Length: 402
Ligand SMILES: Cc1ncc(COP(=O)(O)O)c(C=O)c1O
View (cartoon, helix red, strand yellow):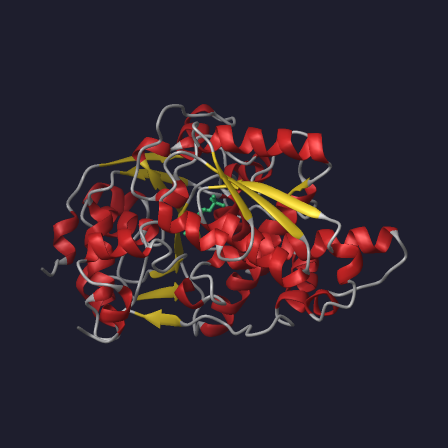
């Protein structure tokens, strides 16, 4: 079955954050900066098999929707991990090991770690984290690549496919009974009791250094996108979980562009902690099952560092239900050059298509024939079974045009 763009006349919630000051200068260099990006870029681009992921231009979709251009950065091909998260957790693991080696007077680079030069020292170190899939895969991959041990905590709703994908990198994976936020708390407790280091993608009071590295790693993707674009975007639609990914994109674009784009943050209606934080003007948790097929976005608590960036520069927040997600995944799979996009990859694009079908919202977001819209397709089929169920074909069939 194929879908038309006009099929996206679907319900949504929208909130306009009037606390931001349009045109205000970037002031969050203590969290994320172009200077720290340079360090992350130097390390990450030295890793085996590093290459920029493709940026696709959807001229047909732009014409149909009535905007000037649509660009989609495809993270399905990020290393072998199928998601942008490969840049964050793994970079934080490398940085942690580099710092620990410095404490014993060894100056190492991530390249030295990959080459196993200090394996004797790093093999005594254990990293751990909670995850709903992609972040844990990145940390486990990083631990394997850079030579330390790894323990991962997953919650009750993480699929078996995602669990196996993490275990494949040699990490010990522990499933708990609670939800994502419970797994975050447990990982912190285990680390405390065992002298492990938590490598989390979410920051909380008293725990900020490592999540900064995670987010800074993501900015490598943003830099690639800008270099691949002929003209800078006027709009960027970003999906949000704890907020680290959108904060990384926002920080990089606000600091590097004279005229930053309009940002629209899109979340699942059942896990809309960033939306609710915008409404309340402070970090606000949402509780319950956080039930959504957008597994990577099923987060109930914001990352405090990410939030301080988002509240300052993001004017629009949307929440959407799951209904549009399989439709967008299929739209992308059916393109002449097929694209494999997972459930959490397409949320920004789904939000845009929904907004484009609502004249009032379209006007509020200033979407018109001059708009150049950028999306980050943050994952491929990171859960292969789920992908096949939702699209009706496996990713390899999609890519072979079957
Ligand atoms: C594929 C994908 N996209 C987007 C996000 C959102 O990132 P964040 O939780 O940093 O907001 C995630 C988080 O896990 C993800 O897995």
